[in-house]
Length: 438
Image (cartoon, rainbow, N blue to C red; front, side, top):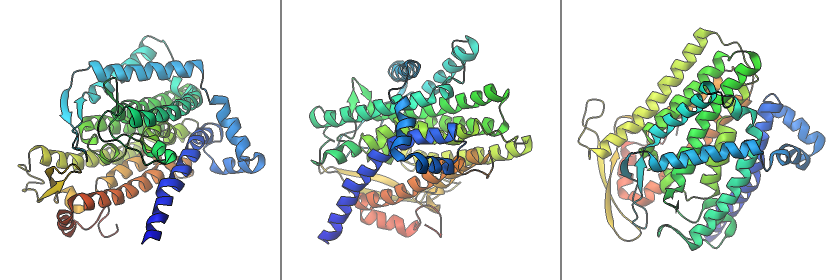
């Protein structure tokens, strides 16, 4: 038994952090290089690596953009400053997150949707309206933006490590004594700096809003290069913008998700949202910039409808659970009373708490059925460029692996938290994602 535990600790507390911390930052730059300079071909990247060596390729790709550029820093500074300003000044209803293991209850302001809309209004107003910059500006400077973000995010995560060790915002903090793991995982669950919630900023306002602005700029970049934008990039960018509009409608629900209530603010979450999201999540549309396929209108309409339907199903599933919990179960699901389990649990401080586990509607199909339409949404906005290339589907594959892993993580968390109540739920809902499969 001790051997198994030791092997698990070596894997999760050393090998995985080492791999992700040292591999992901250069890979983010290579992802940009592949999509912008190598026609989205990983085969060309492989040939380049064989011909020149890994270190030489990484140096040539990354070092030229390592510190960004004056324009990139200006863009990042203005965008980050705007998001912080909107977080602070925009009105919004106060809402609470999930009570923490130490009994803390984080409080947020629900103004993400207004911030999202205002950011787009300013982007279009300043570019198309006032002509202060070209709307393709993000694509035109994306290598320098990623380089600057990579440099900044790695340092920011180090700051968060020391903050959690020596100036935590709450009692939900701590160190394992393993610097690398603590840097990777984080030392604090809910850090706040000058009143700003770090996760809400990095995950939502910077990461998600930046994703939407980036793909919009990419569509304008294709129009600038070829004289017009192809339907493939138009519908792909539009689906992502709509998906993220849905995200901000549901931001209060996201602040109760595993990303927020389980994962600490370290490299895994914060670097991921500041660098991995712009480098990888935007990659299908980044690839499309230089690969217009002449997608006919009827095909574009079908793909757009499929993507829109998937986004709606994803929202509908999340909405069902939100409504059940906000009404304490006094609602209907698909015209019937919800099937509920009144689960009791105890926090690490000994407080007795209870929660509602929904076992009907979408949540009666599988415990994470909402992952299926989320993956399908990504598939639809990636497939608009056809099936002749692998690059546009890298994100879909990554997302599928991420969400499957997350489903198993959530299973372990809920089993530990709810005990016999989770066993009762499992009897009603035996599958995690796809009924009959997993």
